[in-house]
Length: 401
Image 1: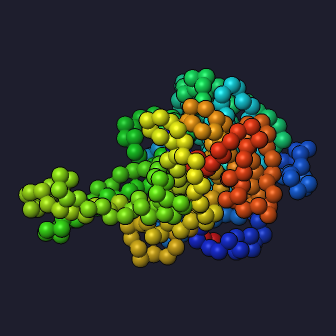
Image 2: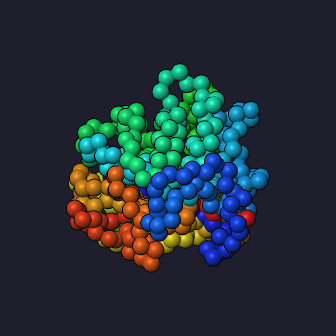
């Protein structure tokens, strides 16, 4: 079982994010539910200011009037609009249907992923979906819309989102999240009758997808060979790391290939010493960092604190180093409480568009104390469980206005 963290990148200083009037970006209908936020203010629907892409992501985003074209398939006629706005307030809690805390935590992290939530709230997919059978994208659209439009309520996740994975026992929340993303990807490909599972034109790939570059350099002739592999998440080994930054540095540290592990050079036509370096070739709009806490053999959990920043600059881990900062901001953290992947409890923290963090613990939704740091929140003990640690985090790329 692995750990999961969600992060967003940004290209401006935090203090400058709310310097403009946000009312001009409110494109969804205003709702007036009888529910109050933790601060006592009446909940309302609005969206935080639109973030435009950094130079590195401009070719992909190409925002116009705050919207980025996104497609669930390759056909130009099927282009979709994707907004980077965030739901302003927190939505509904989720009912535990019996060992489904991992499902609820993962679904809440997806619900508060800004570009995904904005796309689903626009109802664009259901207007063009041609699937005659069950469609995961349609199901996610229904779930996210219900969750965000019913603040203060408790809703039940659609059984169709759960039955294909759930075995009436505790499961890995991140594995369920990736299972759901894969089902969404297959729905995109099925709609357009594609067989390429890595198509970059799909909604899933455009939000969560990026590419690794694995570069091997022969130390004899100095020839270089590049291999590019797609990713939706990044797994971090934390055995020798005390922070996310240290784990990332270890991940991209050059590895020497020699001895029995020597590289067969196509130029030298023999096995030779070489250097292998892994870097990010293209960055994803949403970055999921999975902290590898659980043993592959016993399932036991590593009880150590791992420091991670609320803002993360990924530029130093990119293949090209001649650009400015590539900043991401944390917006969701998946937390596991317990000592093994086979038991325990999952919940999550999410950051709504009003800038406040909320704890989403099945049906219970509670606002966090603003003065408490994000790192302190993640290490707070759960009232019914011990060994509470961040399982994974999600970052969202910030785009410059």
